[in-house]
Length: 301
Image 1: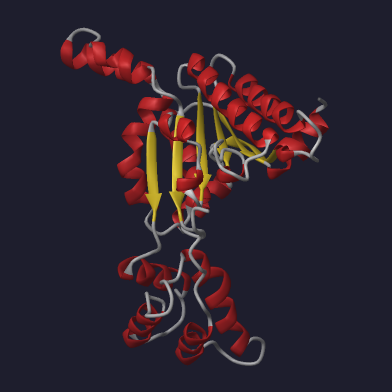
Image 2: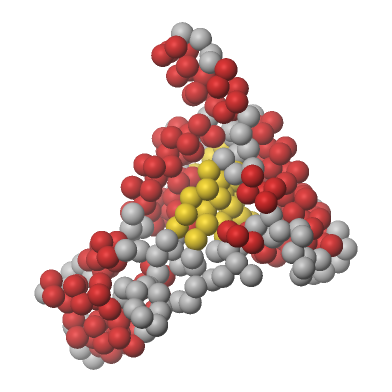
């Protein structure tokens, strides 16, 4: 395939790391630092098995047997949770942070949903194979490469599902084989598989995950942090923030708001009350919180 096909059909994102724009987004990602602190050691073990060997020799004066066992894990991390909870941007930000911490050139790729192809027999498997080949080639012998697979339940759904077609089953087999192959690269390629329906994933894919991280809708503290971050510069009473946190929490008939609900629905709705004729007020924000509805839950069906 030509490089043009690689760009338009294989990847939505293909970018060198570290990247200033990704770093800036991570600084506005509520809870990222705390989550990354939980993940960082596991991610570093996956991305740099030699670091584990150095640790073992330094602290135990030999390479422990567990180093080989841990080094044999699949370079796969699954981010699972409701829509709009920050899974994709967390994968991007974590990749960027690893590149910065290891001080090594890296590339990040985000697989395009266009790899599903046009329905021709064997097309999806061919595109998936080529995508993994491109990522592995970019990693080479010294660089790092990170591959993000969004909406992974559409590519790696359980093969025994009643609605699973032959091409879908072949695609799952291809992903499994390619993830198996990536172990040969010694941690230089790491795959983040993002899904809104973790229960729909094929069990063989789930078994290969070295880490499964669950993403939930923001709690009261996280919603308040998000409002205070995004509304910085406005003079608002603490009572306004308390009301916003309460109104965006779980109610009898609906779930609480996701990060995306607040940033892409509630805040623009509030702004429309004031723009372009007057200042934005706390009453505008509270009215928007009453008007807007949270996203429904995505179920594993």
